[in-house]
Length: 291
Image (cartoon, rainbow, N blue to C red; front, side):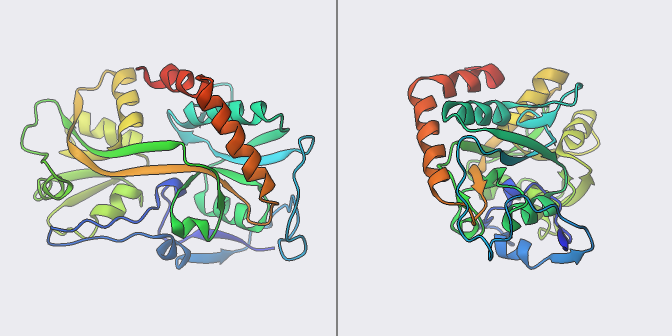
């Protein structure tokens, strides 16, 4: 069986949302269709877990069945492998709590290849993936749980910088003209800024590295989600700060294999509602991010 990789797009699938900023001299649209158009076949056998969707159009998952959940292994503080090789992070803690709440047997499988992960869930190799953007486009590919991940994309600069920012997203983008901006290779910020010829982009292998380069003075700014950036700033004592207003708000949830009986999504949503109402969800958030 053939697997798939994303050609020219290695950013986290959770962040492949529609990006459309008006009011500047250029704009960028990134949708699930532009990602799908870049799929190229590669010879990589897949281990089929629940079976081909066309053969098993609706697969029921019972509590005693082991649900296979794909989890990214390199994105602190949301989900990553710790020094013991165990998955950890805010999203991981929430997901474990949800599945334990509904009494579902499950196994988290780490991944670092976004393209293969997407194809694995679409074909049924994995039952679900953490996490997926909550947009109409992605509803065509996944059955989505209720959204519970909400994050702002911000511009970060060194503490002494006062020439970047603005009262609107358009002003924030325009303030980057003539500047060097650090971005993750083919990440969300790369796709947002790549068509602005007045902005020089410096690509790094991860957003974590790009934040460090900003603190060192190698670039003038870095676009990053608020929570992971502030987590890194605190842990590494970096002298950087967010400026302006959020460029966009990202929301997401768990994305389920389309071939599954949708009853599993209903059970998932009920367990999510339960941990929200009993305060567990808020306690987990505070554990990672404070008040």
